[in-house]
Image (tube, rainbow over all chains, first blue to last red; front, side, top):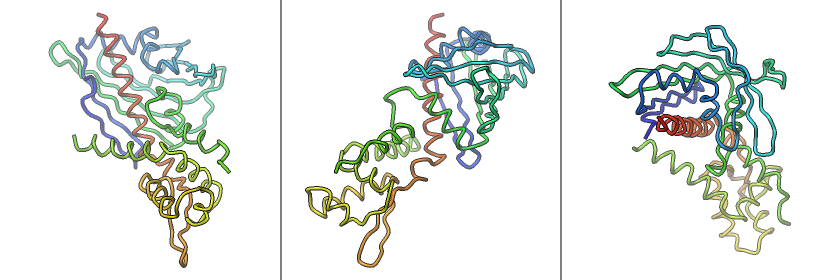
Length: 165
Length: 110
């Protein structure tokens, strides 16, 4: 199993994940560095991600969108705040309009990714911190794999149905 | 792991709560207004006790709150229960578990 630990802090709206992979650090780094590989795993099959900009340098930007089951597009941006290949990557993640411009809505998520070699294997630690609960909620709505659980949006859908009289 | 089991049981309660059409109907009603248990019971062709049981299941899943008022029990939708940060973090955790699994699949291709 890839994920070996998960630590959630509801007060700080943060999550720390530790995963281990049967591949070297350089290979795992490519999953972040190469936008074609990144978009294969960032979004679930029901919300695939497309990165149309990926300036993988400190201070560089990425622009992406995720396409939902109804063809709707949710746009986002990243700004790489630190890159130390192949060990550490930090970026801010926020919502954008259809031109890729940050909307400023709902705050920014700050993510820190560290890769450590474990012999031939790699340990990846990701720390994600959100600024607002609304932002976390929207991220969840965009990232959900269908049928996994009752997401907030699905509950809203159930509530929107007329009651049986 | 104990933590996983706790999380599983929370999720199970939510699933269980929404698995029944009467309970879904109760949640819809109390989201837009408050009802007494006997007021709710009038909508369904089942006993007061049966409706009370449905409300108790919803209460355990934090989807509704129940409050005594005189001889009546008033049921309301628990909006915080639907949107709490903890549950969202649980969902976000699943997103990352799925991402990590997809990463492992790509790495397994060589």
